[in-house]
Amino acid sequence: MGYIDFSMLIVFLIGMFAIGWLLSRWIDTADDFMVAGRHLTPFILAAALTAANVNLYSFIGQSGTAYQHGISIVWQTWTGNMGLVLSGLIIIPIMRRLRIRTVPEFLGMRYNVGVRTLIGTYWVFRLSFWLGVVLLAAATAFKTIAFVDGLAFTGSLHFWLFIFAGIAVAYTFLGGMWSVTITDVIQFILMLGGALIMLPLVMQQVGWFPGLVEAVEAGHMDLVPQFGKYNWMFILAIWILGIQWASTDQGLLQMSFSAKDARSAARGLVLAGIITTPFALLWILPGLAASILHPGLEVMDSAFPTLMSSTLPPIVLGIVACGLLSSQMSTISTNLTGVATLFVNDIYKTVLNKTASPKNVLWTVKIMTFLAGAMGVGFAYLIPLIGENVVEAYLTVVGIFDMPFFVITIVFGLLWKRANWQGALIGYLCGVAVGIISASIYGTESFFLSTFLSTTAVLVITPVAALLFPKAKDEQLDHVWKARTHSEADEGAPFHIVPVSTGGKFFFVLFFVSLAVYLAGVISGSMGCPWAGGLALTGMIAYFLSGLFRLFYD
Image 1 (cartoon, rainbow, N blue to C red):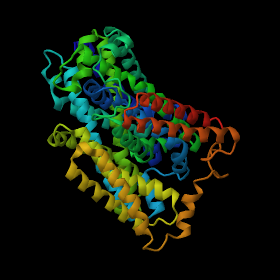
Image 2: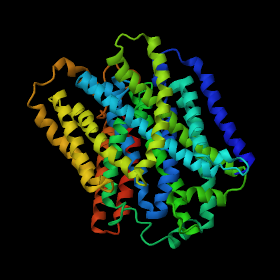
Image 3: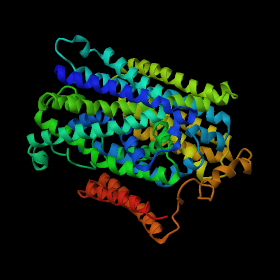
Image 4: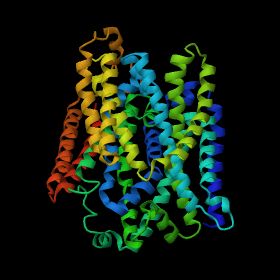
């Protein structure tokens, strides 16, 4: 990278800090910092969610996986988007009506403070670990992409790690969720612009899509492979984890809770899921093209950076690099806010200082933003000790710990009144234990099995354990159960989970029929059916369209 391109990166980082400083005057209360005063419109929410959830893991990790294993890794993005639409239509409107800041706060309403604090503590470290992953990915990529001859520090992992963490902490500390949201919208535009510059330049070199299909390795264009590391079982497992992620991930949901009403939250999530779906091709197709243009790379994650260095001229390289950096900075800042909010909302205010004043709460969440950045940097240095399979280890952690959390929160928390805190706690701990035992026996590569066993255990054990203890008091459940349906007390326009109009009911039913078609396509991949990929893709498209049209009816 030349001096001009490097200067563009520095100007971009200074600009992000300046935005945080300008927005700091908007921050008067803890709600302003943590949920942007609950004023986000559907489009701003969709853009911010898209920017926060597209990061260097997509451009580097998924692109590299496509380089090595083929196109089927695209389902990691697509199934997450399917989860966003499902959560937006059914789950998030309920959470938004409850006016919560975190999912553990919901557990406090539904069960008790003990469950809330336990899960809140876990999520503080869980999000800090993910923050370490994204910081390390950014620093590793940019010590290569942004290396300038004559400036040795630009090739230092430590330099980029502290630059990214420092800038993100600074503008998040100053502007909170307002700063995160506004910068995410800007970063979304830059990310999209950079990726759209890169894609045609790369595809032209391989003869566009027909040339790519003809030259790529056999089997790499199979959407639903029967065999291989990313086969139909992987697609099923990542679909389940996509629903869990879209329903319970704090970094994602904190933005959703910032929507001005339940209807806006639903529209924001559905739009984010649909918008991001074609974006997946912006990093998957370059990864496939790199397998043709640069075969034999020792490290598959170097595929996208290698394409950038060999394809882009000066200034254009700087623009695309700013776009990639945008995608990562938005993810970092979102998770910084998530960690700080979890600590203050579910540990500080509920255990450490129950009588904290609004001013104390605001300053505590700001200070925790700095500590979250420090924990993220610490995890970034610890992650390489895990070994080469960091992504597989991360997915295994999600399957073991997050899926039982999803079951006690969403499945039993919203669907079964008889569930009590004793059953939820016993079921969660048993599910985690079963997942850990499975991973220790079969290894992190079999995360499908660990996910399946941990989920099955909590589904079976929770109701059995719950029946051994008294049921929760009705008054404890009334507030949660009332939030499942629209009432006159709701903010904004009406939004019913089950539509009341004929058109809404039609598209709601079509939504689930389309989901069944998608699942039929994935499962048919287990038999090697040649039409498996096409059927799954058709079902997914119909799923998105029916979910979108459902929003026009109530």
